[in-house]
Length: 161
Image (cartoon, rainbow, N blue to C red; front, top):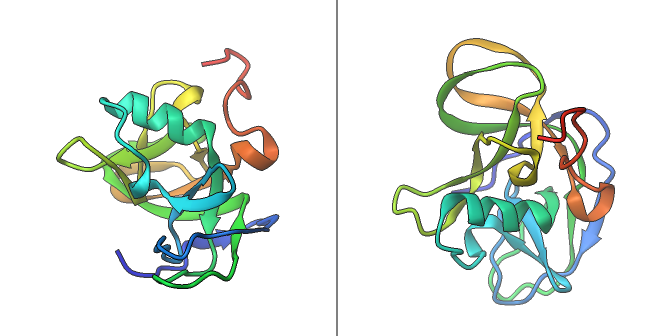
């Protein structure tokens, strides 16, 4: 996928994250923290199932890339840890507060760096729906919450789902 500024509104509370020279990050990528470096969702090792991939990613979710990093670059990048971003998603309807996590590719062996999908529990989520969509749509506004910086979405709902 290519660079796409996904931020729509709200405070982004950015952090500056280190990136390895071999890691390629595009603007708009969902980013996780791997020990001490930022990486896009697609580079996370496959955990064997979509929910296992989503849960691990949510546990390490840093935010959304606001800058790119090409192969060979070693400069740190700015990553938004909060805010409302527009992401592609499988066609569907969305209610305010629905939980969203990183979507998996069609092969079922990696997460997508710039696509989200509904998830069944907060432990898989990186954000919540920020605008109701009553008709089927392939894009959704997501209020993201970095797990690394803000504690994330998990446990933020009254029912703890």
